[in-house]
Amino acid sequence: MEEIQNTLKKTIVELYAVEMDVVLTPAPENTGCDFATNVAMLLAKTLKKNPMEIAEEIVRRLGETDLEVEIARPGFLNFKLSNKNLLKNIDKFEKDFTKNISSDEYSGQTVICEFSDPNPFKVLHVGHLYTSIVGEAISRVIEYAGGKVVRANFGGDIGLHVARNMYGMLRKIDQIPTDLSPEKVADLLAECYVFGTRADEDDAEAHAEIVKLNKMVFEIAEAGEGADYSGDPERARVAKLYFWGRKNSYQYFENFYKRLQVKFDKYYPESTVAKTGLETVRRELKNGVYEMSDGAVVYRGDKHGLHTRVFINNNGLPTYEAKDTGLIFEKYKDFHFDKSIIITGNDIIEYMKVVLSAISQYAPELSSRTLHITHGQVKLPGNEKMSSRKGNFLRAIDVIEMVREAMEKSSDEKVLMGALKYALAKYKIGGDIIFDIKESVSMTGNSGPYLQYSAVRAKKILGKIFSGRISGELNKVESEAEVLISENDSAEKEAKYLADISIYERNLMKKLIQYPDVLKETVRELLPNKICTYLYELAQEFSRFYEHVQVAGSEFELERGKIILVYLKVLTHGLNLLGIEVPEQM
Picture 1 (cartoon, rainbow, N blue to C red):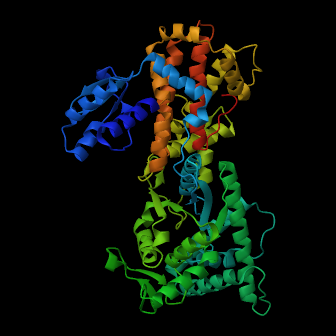
Picture 2: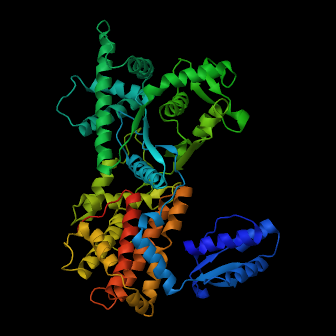
Picture 3: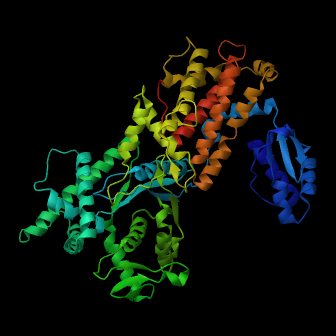
């Protein structure tokens, strides 16, 4: 494919002095060709010429090469790859896989990828599970493309939800327990939060106390853990409970992320960015970006086609908007990012537009570098939206355990995580997701375990081909087979094999050489689901190949083994970008 693309690019420059990307897609089956492109139709708009005329001009020039090309109305160019060309591409992949799939799209750039963002004092729910998995996949894709990724996590350790939690803690916890795990503490804090929320909504006196606690917690967090409250026993008790709850919350988060193999480089609690947010908003209030309204500081988003939001409330406290403002400046101070990616639920799309619109008035270099990626709700069949406000939410750990139970015979953590990660990553980011537990663990459908099993099967075939010549350990098969295939390459044998290649081998090879283009598209759009779709289709081609073509013990076992080796490399690489490991046995 790369050869076709490069030849086409060169031809277009020679004929029309136009530089353009060439995208190849699978040709319709009824054409008898392998790949197609619409470059002639794209050029027609620029050159103001008939696309068929342009296609004919390109084909005449390509006649000087060894490419087989046909024209189809209204201007498609359809290419057919010879068996020799396909094997040539497989050889390139086998000999230098990394070079042939490399990307420098983000080379030299520092990218902050902020995702997951749970609030301390609250339990992790399935939405956090989703954004942790997708955020890690996007981070890996950017790293693959040469970027230096900083994984960041922003959470509310101050604010109304903490005040409500403190109200519940003050009534439910007489003595701080010392024998609870961070996970058990998180469950206790969840009970306190539900208790405090109900009291806040139903009881005027409770509401007044929670307003007071909100301000007190802000001051306690700002003063830090070592502050002396010996003359104020009420504040001392709140501070003790607060720092105990916060510490256990972050340890609970870390335990969860470790299981997902996600490692954050920087946590940004809201308390650490609130001061910067307050100072920034107050400074730009003087410059006319923000305005006073009923004792609060607001941004008139309605003047910019948005809506008006409060950045500092009439108690002088920063709102989420001010804290998000401070966060952007703190991120830039810490890492001087080239791009800042924020991954959240789509319920704050309009909110974030207002925050970025305000910042664009005085720091356009920061707002323009910020990309907000949003996703919908994750639901189980039944379609009920989750909420932690009333306590009727689906915890992340509940989902993990449901998948484990559905796996029945297997207890392999790699398979469990593969099922979870793939089930969530395979959907395009944006809309709601119905998380089907049974489908996620299927060994025959579009699932992580299906792909993991396919990789294990490929390793076993390679092990059978080289039985007695390699160690037999599956984790070493790929590297050992690679050495033996290189040592036993035979041009004479390959020439004979060219005449014996079946449609199943052709289809598998055609799919394999599409991988660089899939990666390029994934990097450009930051959509990991494109990798999932490709890997599933690739695994299906491999399954058909395995069913119809004898490999081990055949005359061409080495030549076919080379195709399987490249398949294993592609599948393993793609799964790794999704954060999925291949187990030793299945």
